[in-house]
Image (cartoon, rainbow, N blue to C red; front, side, top):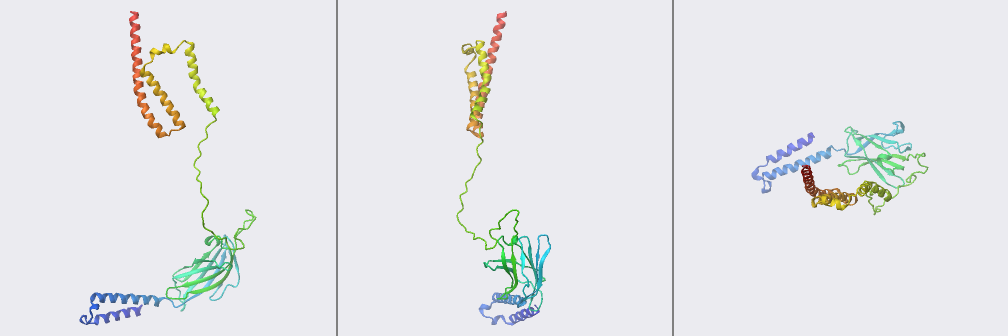
Length: 328
């Protein structure tokens, strides 16, 4: 950084020492400012690449297989460029932990732009990349399991550490060793191994799926017809009893005729219409249609009922006056 500061100061002094009248037209003060900005960007870019490491080195590589209970099942420590001396097996519930220290050529801890743990299947060549979480101190860590990566992470895999930065055309690729991933088979639930056990996963194909048929709510079941007819007879039975009583007392339509008028008949017809509307609501109409018709019939029932009651009251009053005159 001290070198960059000195270079910038020297370049600025050189530009300021040139007389303005000796500058060509393209080097007017605005162009001088642009030239200064361009020079500054070039020097800053040079500083970035100068501060970047010329090469990487890896040390303190630790591999551990941890079970679901947190107990360590196995592991070892190696240094670059050595490889694992043993082959480890990771089951479906286990976690493979890899930690390492990233340094530059001078042995200083650095934080690269990119760091990955590459898992390559030896049988299929399928790769799965896990990002190495690198701290400012250069310590990197990655955890791999069958659940966190993919359900088909089964078989022998090669572990490679890839470290790179923008200033280096060739990244560091360090092969740690081989690890075997195996699923956990619950024999109590299934007597057969999973479909992907012992071979590559099935190829996923894309295409039209079967048509989805939407099933809406089924209509409610109505009671049996015989039961409905029985309740209809129960409801009509009081009217049948009343009609039989009237006939036994000698009440005939001819006797009731003088007591009926147009307003009374209209009132009873309106009541019958309301009852019929309730029947239609039960069979076909919805609540909004029923309320619309009911509002109109209610007005008619109110008017005809008021007139019918007024007429009945007038008749009773007239009948009372006639009886009073007969007594006198």
